[in-house]
Image: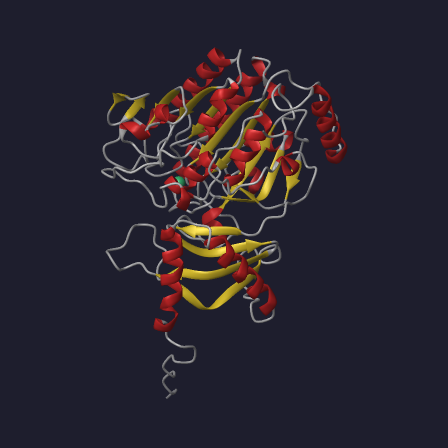
Length: 471
Ligand code: MG
């Protein structure tokens, strides 16, 4: 049983008060009275929104509600998705595990019949025994066959498109029924928002978990009439401004219902920007394990428990959400091993960073990079990082003949390879990767072995043809 800082299970009132006092002292904040029940959890998840796409992350797109959420809570500067594409990122968020363990290493596309493995416990399923009402509103993308839909995976209710808006067919579903097909894209954000407000309204007398994975700004883009043509940054800006409006509506509703101080609201994105949008100053976009493909905005607001206006520069990621929420809700962790860690010490600003062996950057079955402290080691890379699946054999994970080492805190653009000056760091991270890979499913181990075996196939250093002499 986890230590429960707020609710009734797992911790005595004295322990709860002690926890709050300790957190308050560490964070320099004054807490309101401890909530009487486990906190409500709201997780809002954008699709393909870049690290640089919110006002509070330097964008010119107007996002006053998200900016206010950051001002009233905490903003992370090094928060990572476990994968640079849609389905695996969601698998990690809802299980606390690297997607290569969950049966979802790749994007699921119709007519695929796969989905999140039935041995996995989702965050919703974890919260149900704690008395939570649960709803998923938006893009599911963890399997669209009946046995994989949200209502079979711990959610009482579902409303949304079961995968990406660029896939065919495009049904808008309520639970397991199709409401319309194709879904009218311009109406989605307002309708998702209306569903969210109604769910809060009817769930307010019990703890609830609202998981709101928006359809946008994944392409094809669409905004409602009210927002279309209003942003100085074109349709992409319109779409993000409408998402920001939606967040504002949810926050306003929580306040109106008196739930403000007992609700943890989180906002992030599943992967970096695709054709539009901005990764800020970072290198790479969706489908790349450079920072721009996987570093995401992350905001968390929980008045009285998370200090106002805090900025966390520690390392965290979507795999950490489940263990953190489980602890807050007093829920037992799943039986399968969880890769994430409880980041409440970061959220409450009690600590600047947390120890972990290394954070792995996967694409598909392949480990391509690892982060340890300020260092990021690139060990492998595709011959092309185009997102679309290449013809068979056209996309190969290749080992870097000389692994590249970047000091991410000094060099977030991954422009200066410091490997030659830091061989001990390269060796240390390589050893950590080896240890971690040994604990992964066979497919990961095989991919790792196969990638390394390609070392001999790579052209030796210095073997490039000499440049032609100048005439
Ligand atoms: Mg995505």
